Each structure stands twice: as C-alpha cells, then as structure tokens.
Length: 294
Image 1 (tube, helix red, strand yellow):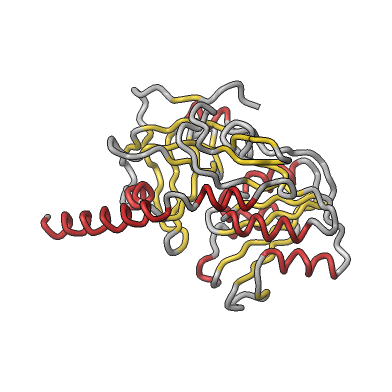
Image 2 (cartoon, one colour):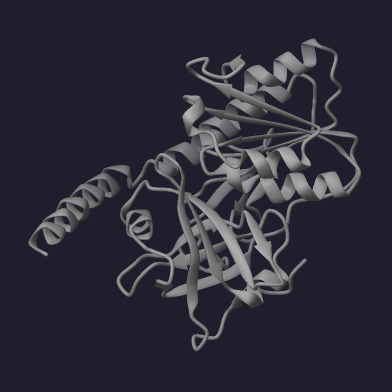
C-alpha cells in the first residue's frame, strides 16, 4: 500500500502517449506518469485536470507500465471535463495528475472470484482481476453493455480470466441480460463463488450486490461518489457504510456492497445532475461554434 498520494513534478509533463476510442463514447488514454506508475496498486485511482480551467475528476487506473512510466485510464464522455479529454490528442499534455489515491483492493487467495464490470468498469476491473489471478484464484469475469459493439478490453480480460462472460441487453452476445443475471446463472449451474468484485455505475453495483446477498457472498464494490479533493479534506465524497460515515477517496473506493446506504448515495449523486447537463450542453454548443468559426 502506498504511503501517500504523489503529484508528479510539474517540470515533467503529463503527456498523452496514446489516445483512442475503445467503444462508442468510451476512450482509452495512456499518460506519462512514471512516479505514479511505480507506486500504483490494483483498485486505486488518479484525479486529473485536463486544462487550466478544468475541474478535478477521478478516474480508476486501469493498467500501468513501470518500464515506460505510463498509466492507463478508460473514461466515458459524460460531462464538460470528459468532453475536453475526448478532444485531446496524442502529444497533448494534461495540466495535473494526482495519485495513486484510495486504498488498494483487497487481494488474497479466496478460491473462485467473480468480477463484474460495466461502462468504464470494463476497463477498470482488469488490474484487480489480474492480481486475483496471480494470487491463485479461479477468476470468472462478466461484462455487460446494451449491445455487443459497446464491449471492449476483451483481450486483456480474457488473458486473466478462467471464464469471460459477455452479456448484453439486446441479446447480441450469447448471454442476454445483466451481470446479476449471470450471477444467478452461475449459481444455478452449481458454481461456488467465494468472493465478488463489481465496478461500474452505482445502479449496477447495487443490483449486483443484491444478487450476491442471499448466498452471503463477500462482495466488494468500487463506489462512484461525488469527489473534489480526493484526499479526505473536502468531505464531498462522504457515504454511509455499515451505518457509519465514510469517505470514498480515503476509506475506499472499495466497500462492502451489502453495507452501503444506496438511497443516500443515489440522492447525493443526483444533486448536480441538472447543472451538469446544462454545462455540458452549453460547452458543447460553444465548442462547436468555435470549431465552425475556425
């Protein structure tokens, strides 16, 4: 576990060395950040600022390369900051990258571990799966999307999974449904699941946690909480777990999925949705106008 978050010296640029669309509206970004790459552990995240007027946004670290001094993130374009990032190119420089932040995922030999990923979590779950495989576990991974063309990172996930299951809402893969349906399918076929990890939108985390509750399967979820500071100072990411106030940035982001107060988390997460929507539309229209003027 790292002792403290690291902010790389500003004389060393956080240069983007790879930038590509992994799936519609999902992007893969590889960033030069050698100090962070040397310290990161599975389950941790960074906070990025894309430009001088940008906000601080957290992203799960999806991979790292200590030899080349890079970290990899996957992100979904959902707001102004991620819109700015989606427009960046290889060779561009991010204003700030701080990390690694948060507690690493708990990695031990449990037996059979089930991991579920959706949206950005399809990329973010990979280092946890890899570490669990290296610890000697049987690793079953399930990823979900609305349709097959929205799935990505299949080669990496397949390289560490004993079984990789793809499910889609429209049935364009072999399995139609969501991750919680896959859990039930595995239980019905007699699979003994000793532990579960989930990463993706909060609704998926909640539904998947409920699917593991009847069997009392220890379940870990990487929470999506509103976050600003990332080091426990602002209190923005507070949530309730086991009836106690926790902070996703320093106590998490991984928590017991059976002990999270989901109603509170959803209420807090929805607080700025209207403002975020207006900002996204305004900035998008302004950017389009500037591009046309150019």
